[in-house]
Length: 481
Image (cartoon, rainbow, N blue to C red; front, side):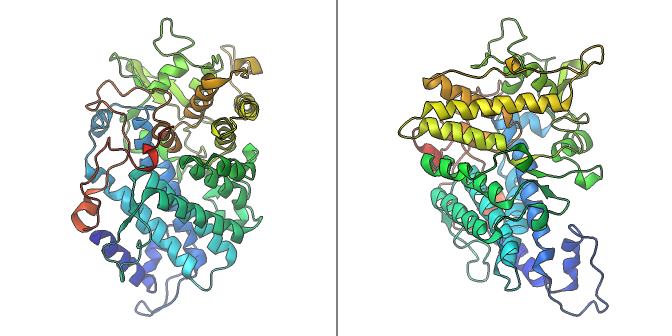
């Protein structure tokens, strides 16, 4: 981790100098240059929290989300490096930036805010929630990661790798400490700025706690947290985007501005080059499809249009038109009502008493919300008339047993398109949904983790040995589902 700590030390040293404006300018345009470029001055922690939020947004919506989404077969890589990704043949260098972005720009800056004596309880709490979530996400993606000795280069130039479960538990504890500090303050009032929106920090943070308790198989704890989590769509913790280049939806920015042609839903000019999600959404309209939905949903016709769009040469792109999932200005969910309801559904089914009635209720709540969401979009028929989508397009379930569990997990897989949590779910459940590997796969087992970056292997002597590979299970996800 030597290179990481070199950069961290450099950032820590320069935070008290004028050069820090290079960081601050990324989150505010209100800073004036100091008259004496050689003078020292302190940076208010209020000016740093935006950088933590940007790092969190970048991780949850950016490269990590894209990689998780072609590993879990939401999308299909169609050009250059993404063709290699379809084989699950990633190299460790691909993770260098992701790792350093989270630790340097997210976790380490959050630490500066948390430890600053001038930070208000609210400011400290926001930083704790985001830092805790970043730690938990890194552990779930990579396995054992630095935690107890992380971002402390003076004392620990080669931090140890803490056990995956203890890092997730540490992340949960940080989020809970943050909840105690933020109170009932809304995200907009609590430093959300033009970056984040939603309800209160407390309800969003409780949904995050529920996510990570579920990942550990703590079903009762997940229910307790989710019960106090997001209970309406208006409370979703989401990113905010605009039309400026560095403020666009990150999926839009990648697929339109930066790497056009790399990431699609399907390439129908080549047999077998369709993502599993594409096939699921098309299953009700493709005669003889080998893929079928466990809960028949004719409304998937509209959901397909919300996610994807047919284009030339048999290519099916992510839909980036105005008002749909990957539009230029579309918000991206970081924690949502739909996720919270589906956590409650699964956890109620999986807990020791196996409460199927509330499990069905929470799944059906999501089905009703989909009707509301798609009616709000305003789909048109061929004559240009607005279509009213009725509940029978997203019928409620009366299932029980394994069928009910499959319906819950499949609804989550489809509804949370592009979100990292679906990759967590497939590994956590032992791929209970039987999502297939891609046709081009050079592995025969579902991928189990992101790879430790080459920069870590080169510089941190405490990287786990032997270095785990792509299909080596992590300790948390080794457990039987």
